[in-house]
Length: 229
Image (tube, one colour):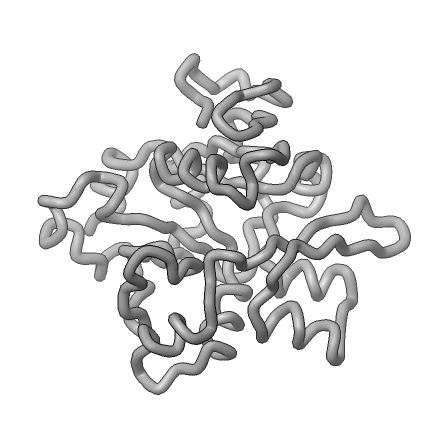
């Protein structure tokens, strides 16, 4: 896949964060779970439980002089199902640590709406970022990977996954998968560790609950009327 094809097909990226996350994202950028644990100086057994094992619930993080953050749960994952679909002799611990080392974006609004409407989240307000693909990709192309599946879920006939699941843009088999709906071709775009300048690429920020956009929190002067989840 070429960078031009990626941007033309998916001109917007989406990220769902916890309610009221925007001020912290503006200040620190979009941080992976591991980057958050670094920032909030979580170590030892507490860090192992959050970084190397399934998180059944979201966990708030606090530290003096920081705004606070939430590490999201991993409810869509089940260890026994994950073990069955992992390849390359990977263990659940390996997979959790891999996922936690990266920042994740959806490439289609339908995917983010699917998450917003999921039973675990539909009753709680969420912060959704709409992001300019071209700007983010240009700034971070050397740290970007693409996934053909929802790597953080083992629901609904979990697909095999392993060391080759995430591919660089130029290695992703976009044309070979072209008969699939757009939202099922490239499913995730991930960036190693963090995106500290993500605010520079955000076009709009919305508070969303279930199927309803409740509030526009922030909008760039570069945004169009269509820049929302």
